[in-house]
Structures are given as structure tokens and as C-alpha cells.
Length: 188
Image 1 (spheres, rainbow, N blue to C red):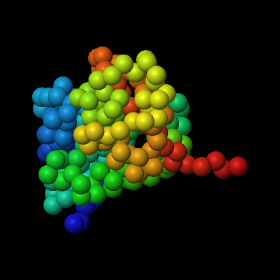
Image 2 (image 1 turned 60 degrees about the vertical axis):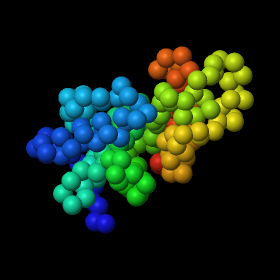
Image 3 (image 1 turned 135 degrees about the vertical axis):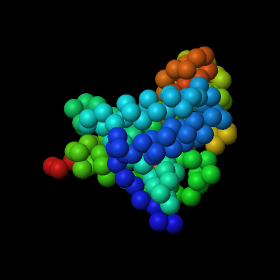
Image 4 (image 1 turned 180 degrees about the vertical axis):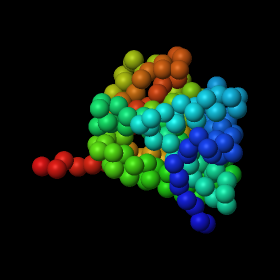
């Protein structure tokens, strides 16, 4: 597999269309309202092309198979990883890992220290979904279980840690799981 990762640019019109389709396909099953129309995906791609953002595409045989974006926060010390999508036909083949590792390098090169992300649970994919997290929160968080292949365990394998949860972020019982990873150590 000769995968290359490039910065997506406005002149990559065909690639932008492919990314929009990947967003649709990758989120269709468990995040129904996310990029449900091609136009929504194209708008997301265009927004991620704004100055100062990270916008990287995984290319295989001249086709996009995955995409990752990043938004600087806290004067560039923190970067939000948003979004990460790999075409369903290519999931489980190391493409997501390659994109995240490339993203970490991009963040470090820009002087970033920490990467954050939110990973919604809108369809009870974890033990935090479908429950009232305001009752006995710390016990529920300490005992989180992945019930239906939620991406939080993918991120944990890459060194991310759960740093919090926003209960009911997407409606009652639909939390956003917040994760982070340090990419640069202190220069002291």
C-alpha cells in the first residue's frame, strides 16, 4: 500500500468531492445527522481550508481514502482534531492511525502542545450513552465500556485519554466524550 498524506488545497476539487462523500459514508451509520448531504461535507472541507487550520487527506491510488482536520485553540497551544474520517471500505487498515500520527506531527511543527477531540455517543455505543450522567457520574465514567465499536478505544490505542464528558451534548443521554493527548513535552 503506497499511502501518501497531503495538505488539501482549493485546487483539489476532485479530492474535495471525495472527502465530502467519505464524511457521508463514514458517519452515516452512527451519526445520522452528520454531513448527511454532500453539500454539508463540501462546506466542512471548505471551512477546514481556512488560514491556520490543518487539513490533510490520505491518498491511495490517486483517490482520497481518509481525511483529518485541525483547529487551533489557546493561541496554538491546543489543537482540536476535527474531523477524522476514513472511507468504510478502508477502515481497519491503518489509515486512521497514519492520519492521526501525521496530524500529531503537524501540530508539533506548529508549536502545539496538546490535541483535544470530542467523540459523540449519539446511539448508545458506550455505557455512557442513554443514561443520566448527572447521577453517579464518576462511577459511570470510571467504568466506561465500549458496547458497539465506538471510536474512543481507537483513540486510546493512539495515546489519547478521556478527560471529560459533556452530558446530553446531543440530546438527553447523548454525551460527547472529550479526549486529549500531549504531543510536545516541556523544554525545561
